Image (cartoon, rainbow over all chains, first blue to last red; front, side, top):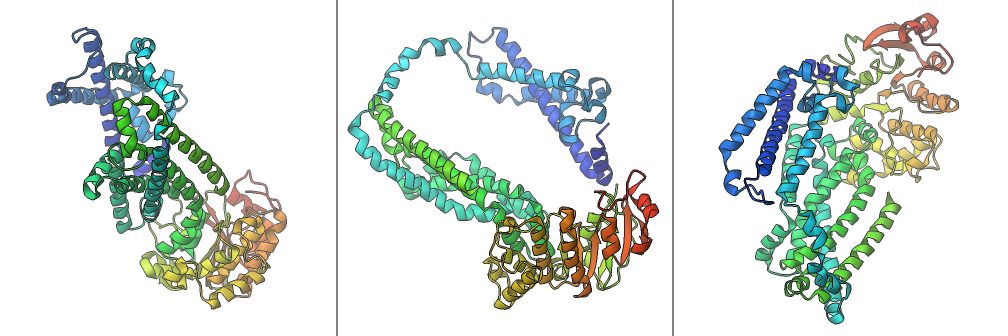
Length: 365
Length: 240
């Protein structure tokens, strides 16, 4: 049934194998539930009961838990059925993902397996459903350009009236992004080692630290910088410092993620060698890990600065300082010439930073 | 599936024990269990009378410091200087805080230089480790092992990644650890001529089990075939 590697794992730890089977079943269940829901959605959509284009699911329907309960029950039933007749249908997608493809199916092309066809169908359905949910209107897009012509005309005819103010705030934007990045480096550096799986297996304390850091990082990353900006504007007042803090929080989380992935990719040879000398965890880190990750860390930090320059524009929209601060009212008033000037300034900066960071990364990696 | 099973092996002090066997026969696993780079799932291991399989934390690090390891891929810290790499051998006995800033006592630094001279690299101390050739890197690794002042040296295929012409130069340094310093050496090797030249005793592993134990002189074509299988050809430097 399973691959030989899976059989070995099964013998070594039956409990873990049970967990993986459950995992596989849950994935099957979710995929099949999704399948049922999308089929239903498309049937309803094309039955014409809900108007010409808009087939928005209303909030009441979204909250109709009973309806989703039936769908999940249906998904579970189908997943169970698939498991029962898997010698006819072949391995289910969830089992293939979690437990691996059994050897007798390994050589088959996707068109020869049920899960291949199922996956293809699921992707098609997702595209159809997405088309309807996002209300894609191809005809309008292709024929109604003239309505936006004013804006585009303004953007390509920049006016010089805001040039001076724009340049001043551009400098503020670049420094804002720089300070946010600089403050983020030491914290992200220290925490990234705890967020790397390969260094945190050995003791309970390290495993706990891994979970805590990962959870904190993912939560922080999930909250938009814009929301952080609003929080810090209430905290320290409108201005660039609020922007620095907002980008700083987001950068810490983003850098931990980027850094820790590099730590997970290191060559384990030096780590083994340093461990074998009787070195402690911190010493192994300092000698076996840090020298290997410095170049990629530098390169990701510069990349992050680049991102922060772009993000600080949006942060400025809500009062976080920088060039976005004067961009927002001009967008609202429809002063497209001045908006064009500011957009060009930002574009030029981003372009320069991109060239610069590419050059530096080329040198140090 | 077990990587090793039923291994009952006693190594006497001062031996140069060579372990042979095909790739995947468990040689590396055995060596790595001895300093607990791998935790054996069962079984017990004593080193100099202390049970390393029952030791944890700071005590384990003290025991590890007395066991040096030399690797097939050298495993130097590539972006650090040669001297730093040698000094890393002293980490087990160095105070934590200065060592994190790459600071070592003058005594240790002088020792590191002396060991580098001994392996013939006295003038390469300030080079970056990855600027050295394979043979030189392995000699740096030997200097790092010396720095540990170990009583036991584990060498995991120390010459398998080297040019055949350089193998003896590295093996002679490992032999010196054994003959001059009185360190016990456990070494995995493939080449029959190296085994005959350096080993004082040979053991062989096949599929995780001990299948042969004897003098290097009685390690002939028949035993060779028993260990490596009928397809293996005994040659001066073959069988990887």
